[in-house]
Length: 258
Picture 1 (cartoon, rainbow, N blue to C red):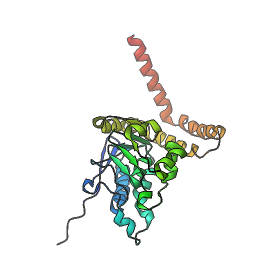
Picture 2 (cartoon, rainbow, N blue to C red):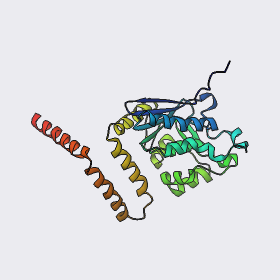
Picture 3 (cartoon, rainbow, N blue to C red):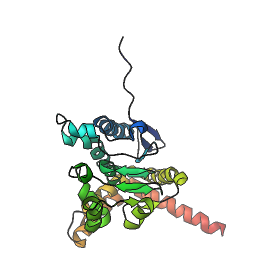
């Protein structure tokens, strides 16, 4: 008699276009093991296949993610790159992604919110890279993503000098978009995700792609050229005229009620 299949370490739900991914291995502090990473990659794929137009990443408390598995790091038969499969799938998602961090994110666990478009934190959050404390160099594009949020000095303070950021400090330094009370964390993430999911899916995807491409450009003129091409595409879509007319009707209705 065959055994039952292993429980997935990442739960997935999709409701009204919003996919919620929950790291669900609290007994191991949601450690980013090879299995957790693979399950996260599969969860992203499943949510997108299920019609998700925005993704929220959260975790069962009390720890958001304790980083890479130490046993996994000692296992030289497994390629290091495999540990980042979930993070890379999250970063490559074509829809808006929002991390709701309500506890410590440690080491490679910091990569998960860094891979998202928007990071929300609670006062209980801690962002603590700590790679060097276990004798390993940062990986998965950690330094590049971190410096993109907090600057080179911030990345040096966190990674080289062992500093850490609380939820409030992460908001102040730009690593998190907002720090909200714990009981408001997931509702705030879901509200932002629902707003994104309620917009034109092709338009949101194109805008997200343009944002990513524009960050690699050297000057404003090139960015304007990139945006002009995308804007031209948007106004040529049949949905554009329909949307403008709906907005005009709404404005007229509001004026008539005054």
